[in-house]
Image (cartoon, rainbow, N blue to C red; front, side, top):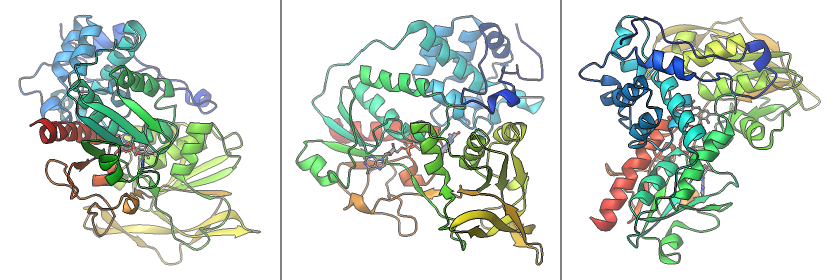
Length: 453
Ligand SMILES: Cc1cc2nc3c(=O)[nH]c(=O)nc-3n(C[C@H](O)[C@H](O)[C@H](O)COP(=O)(O)OP(=O)(O)OC[C@H]3O[C@@H](n4cnc5c(N)ncnc54)[C@H](O)[C@@H]3O)c2cc1C
């Protein structure tokens, strides 16, 4: 039976007034009845663009949704498992509005089917009912592969290679596994136990982990092959080098990068004591930073300072709404000029108002400063969330792009070094979890073909 409602089944969530005092997940997930009701909104259209055009890893979306309508939630999980190793993560953090849901036929009239919420439901159901996946290590083929970095690209690549009989070791420079999923995205969007259970699945497949080992510092790419006997290497070390604001006063105490703040919050649970906080930037990192900041124990006022208007802002609109509901104030068409301070500490952020002129090379309208519109925002903390890059020089022997230091790859993700492949943010610059996973899967296929034809 089809559910003809034009609107998605709303997912229950914590009241914003309550959730600003905790780091528990904001949205609490569908019940079985809600999932079935939402799944029944799928029209089972013939071309299923959600899967073909919308999903970078081509999840069998109509098929898993149909299983939900039959109440076969475990069957739905098995369908998802054919293409993704991280459904509980992707169901929570993928920008579905640009991908599967952005291509859903139902969205032509009303709202798209809530594919992300359904994916999350199925993955959570499996975790709660089936426990961790039983070890099903296939027969080994005698080939060893090193994966550099344990983010989504590394997880996806290692999972596929291990399933194909390769002996895989992930080298991770931090002590925790998961890359941005672990130290970037806060637990109110991605609870840490969910990532832990996905990593457990990799361990069950026989993947080994070496944490606290930085390739390029503790061991070189060349040594991995010549000394450690790896037949191929996949470099997926991300784009974790934060870009700095570069305005006068940026060296004052209280100017911090969003990546550092989020890493503190996520890993050590250390919450800063700032009271008035300005986050500069308009992407997803800025949204995570501002939503974390309203949860700081002494937070009184949190601003997002963005130089263009809301229409040009790259952040997920749903995230912006969540932030507004939690009390964040958005200052659009506002650019920082200088961090002002006293006795070495931040006391304000001097800004100027902008108007918008013609589109620039990115297609977005260019901000133009309005003379005489300067003002000082009284803050004791400025969080920089204006992008990040890669630090690949230490890897050595591998061709990097001139401008951004990203790794240059061929169509099959092979690099200038024989037997070394690369993918994820370190090749593309900051993108998405699912794009990194897609690269990991592609690299696994290329490595298999390189090593065994
Ligand atoms: C705060 C934040 C929020 C985000 N929110 C979203 C979101 O909601 N949805 C979404 O789709 N995307 C989001 N993204 C982007 C997404 O997380 C990234 O695109 C994705 O994680 C990239 O995956 P990756 O595997 O290439 O790299 P990463 O996840 O960055 O993992 C790279 C790993 O390599 C390790 N490493 C680095 N150098 C070395 C070395 N030399 N030796 C060994 N290990 C090394 C790092 O410690 C890290 O663990 C967000 C990013 C950030 C920062």
